[in-house]
Image (cartoon, rainbow, N blue to C red; front, top):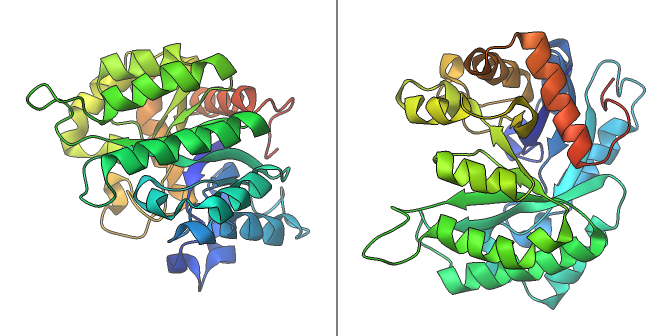
Length: 283
């Protein structure tokens, strides 16, 4: 079965049909979903864990709805909220067994908002907590031109931080909704990261991204929805949901020259290896 490695299940857009949405995911062959705990504000990062516990406690968990895991983290544009109380909350959440990753965290230079130095400091403080809790990280990196007039961009700043502060941990992580070039892909793999592809891989204008994906090793990739955003091309403009990760997986399989069963098996193995699961989760 497939794993959706990144979905915002706590979104209010699922308030009326969250259970039905999860049943559709199971019926589409999705055995596991990693629910992302960033909330609309940093103090809401616990909601993904709450949803995991709610649905994992049901008799249908693992046989009717996917197995759920959670992350917790402070989104780049919420890092100005990263006071001691919020960071203590993050530390407590990462101590919970269902919270298997810290994220999504990182740098976003595309949107105006939280100053870049504040984002970088927030990332560093979260890396310290994640390392102490031995949790892999989920990275959000969105550049704005990335190199302009000799000024380092988001990818440059990110890799500088990760090389110094994260590589030594050996914990690795996921480059969520990867959108970089082949250079960034190779550097990410070298740092022990998996590259996760979302529905935008299927968009007509995403040929450069497909060209990158086609050059990657099968043991270095994952698939995700980033639901409720980035619905694949067939559903573009609609609310995304985990069931549709199968469409991204199908495109990625074609790019890598494997069938749909093999891409499901490989991405599941990659996810399990990163999070040190001994068996295929969700089965």
